[in-house]
Amino acid sequence: MDFNGLISHPEILLLVLAPLFFVCILLEWYLGNKSATTPKSAKYHLPEVLCNFSLAGLHQAADILAGLLVAKLYLWVFGWRLFDIEMNLWSFLGLILAQDFCYYWFHRASHRVRWMWAAHVVHHSSENMNFSTAFRQSLMYPLAGMWLFWLPLVIIGFDPNWVVFVVLLNLGLQFFVHTQAIGRLGPLEWIFNTPSHHRVHHGRNPQYIDKNYAGVLIIWDRLFGSFVEELQTVDYGITKPVNSFNPLVVIFSEWRDMWRDVLAKELSFKHPMAILFAPPQTQQTSSKQVKTRVANTDSNVQ
Ligand SMILES: [Zn+2]
Ligand SMILES: [Zn+2]
Image 1 (cartoon, helix red, strand yellow):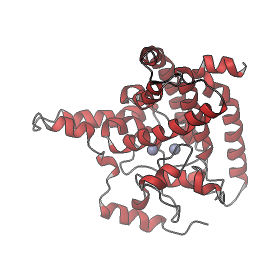
Image 2 (tube, rainbow, N blue to C red):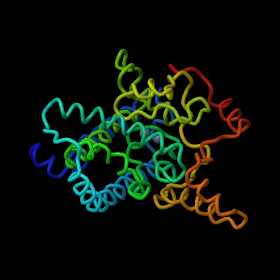
Image 3 (cartoon, rainbow, N blue to C red):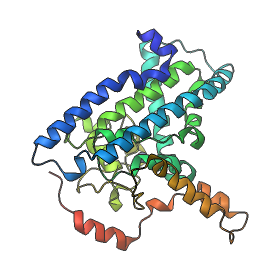
Image 4 (cartoon, helix red, strand yellow):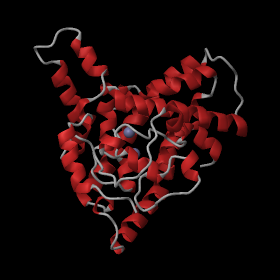
């Protein structure tokens, strides 16, 4: 398929990139097994890898189905666009920059609004970090409202097909930051989201929680005060572990807990909204729990 074909059907971009993802996974798995210094949390554990692949498949299927509706909405909104933007190299780069900015706020909201965290928690619930972690995505993103964050780009006047293409390109590029095999990348660390920055994002060490939301560019975190450097060894995962390799349990356990809280009998009418839109408790750790865990994992990063 040529580039124009891909722009007409941007929903298949991740499938087109899949062979490259699998080559990286095989290389990381093979080299990680050969090296004596590979941390346990970087190794591939078959039940989890199968869970991650299942989550990716379900996410892809849900995205393609929801995309049928979202595409209609985007096209309708596109009819009221503010500007007619012709796509060329410069407008493409402008779209990448604008979408990455929107991604930053989508990702930040996904951590700070429980309704959205219920979907995003799937990506964070692994206690390991390797390329297969990138495959942990939730089929609930369309319900959580991810598509809302790209709507401003369509309103400005970017063609919806190009918007979806750039959204998926951003997601595809993020595959490469899910690894412990790459250390620091020198000056690139100032501008781009790198494996080091994203390892921090997956940490449950108290100083790493809700930091480094970047998609492609780390500049947004530096600008908006959410940047933290990787100094202490990362303890991967969430503070309320899911303890399951069943994809359905991984996807729905936080939705179940959230509705349980909403439907709790003693709550007044006002509280359900506070539960759905307040920051998730799952990421707010008791200091005692954190101190115990950090005491077990604390050491300096090589
Ligand atoms: Zn996140
Ligand atoms: Zn990630």
